[in-house]
Image (spheres, rainbow, N blue to C red):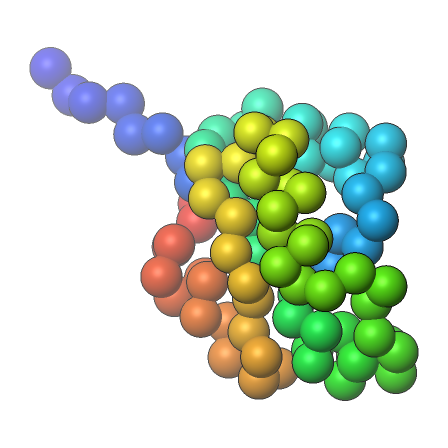
Length: 92
């Protein structure tokens, strides 16, 4: 009998000041499989947007973990284009 493999779903975002849109997005992503969330570091947000998020990375991670939707929530790359979470998690 063949084992059914649970799909790994990886999403990226800043998730600054969680709101209903974030929660909807995360719930929809979770429907596709085991959810992993990569939270953009303050440094990478500044590099991309030219401004820092209102909340520190640790605050944003804590808020996401509190939702209890993701299998794992982690800080994303500090260096743009490294893609460490993709290499480690290997999402489907």
